[in-house]
Image (cartoon, rainbow, N blue to C red; front, side, top):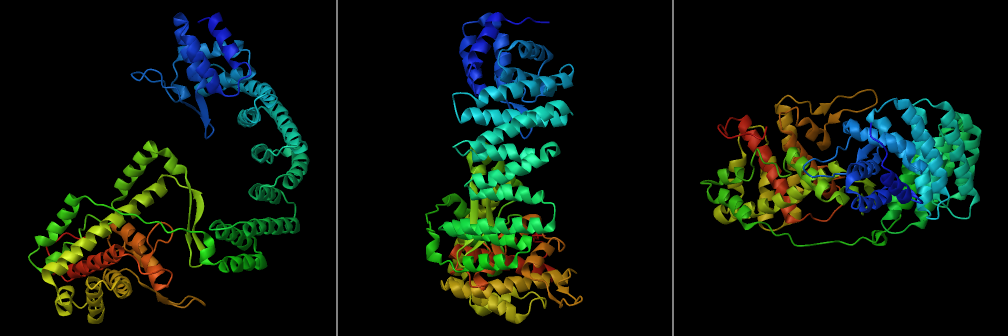
Length: 573
């Protein structure tokens, strides 16, 4: 078994004197290591240990070391000889925060008697927390102290250390009381301490008292509501719970009233949602009316624009498909590639999101929210985007770019063939599945598009896309009507249900996603059918109308295949 190196121990104790962050100690040891080449292994083992950080309740290594032989990020993969070094310094280090961290690592490694390491970690964290709490460097010291005691509490609960848990709880209660008695507001620290304490039955009465004091102490309305929700979860009877719910919504409404710009309808929407969930009808109606009375010009929104340039080679490739088509029919079908939906594939979007999250991780943590200014109504709650949201943005950007290329294709068809209404109807008419009047309206939509009468084109095309989809699903045995049930009347499936049922009709997931983003997705997509036909937006840009016409061509092509007139051509399904 190795021995403690006196020089390394002295360097560790000096570096950890008055420290707050483990990284501070690691950096100091890095400079000390250069003067002690014989103890290089000890220095590196300690630097690696100090750069293990807690993430989602687990310890993860951030030290890389030699690029050819990087250090493991999982404590269980750390070599046994390194664990022995950590165990030595865990017993001899002067600062209890260092001892607690090393014992915690050894517990995670599975070294020796793990429950003894858990006890050592709890004891070290508790003692270290007292030092951090009183440190000269504030508020960083108190933040570190709160992390230490909450980690200690988690370990005590996990390892069934009842006596140690009670001591940690007393430490946490004392911290909360000191914050509440002090002149400065430490709202974040209060929350970090009170949330885990609410589960501690041994101090239930004390926690209730602290919650009441904290609600009166904090000025941040979000935190005040958070504490009220905790208090509501502890309410003994329905009457007390209802009074707290009333207080929660009233605070949310007051906060919303004090806000301005686009934030105001977002906050009113949150208040209305809370009131609805609590069954507070009067407050719900009040929030909705306040939101409805906001003028669009008061939102503080700015319309952004820009210029998008596409690769000429890619546009030329798309136009070449039109140039190479011998007939109008084949040129129109060339606008739809069955294996290339406009939003791209889900697999490609996942890869793109993964690359972006790794190369620009900040993108995945930017808070976002979307607002329909016509209401004004929040269409997606403010939150933190993860990779799923990045994927959605990728799909939408892909559709925007594809729309520009489809617009160019349709214009080239007009230049080459200049089809009149009857020529278009002749191409569109495959069998009796689509009625003549629907095909004539679609022909009108294309004619208006080519004349740059965009508002007429989109209003003609959108209902016919929905009608064509309903007819295809019906022909493939998919139920598109609902019979009356009780007091619920019967009817036909609406577009959202029809798009979901495309899966049952054999359409691919990628095409279903493209149609949904184009027509009905109000949170992440273009939502053209809902926004245009409900009068919630001005006429969309021409390239988006081109996407709707492409969707119509996709469905017409499917109908042609139903009539066996497109034999030999690949299908989108």
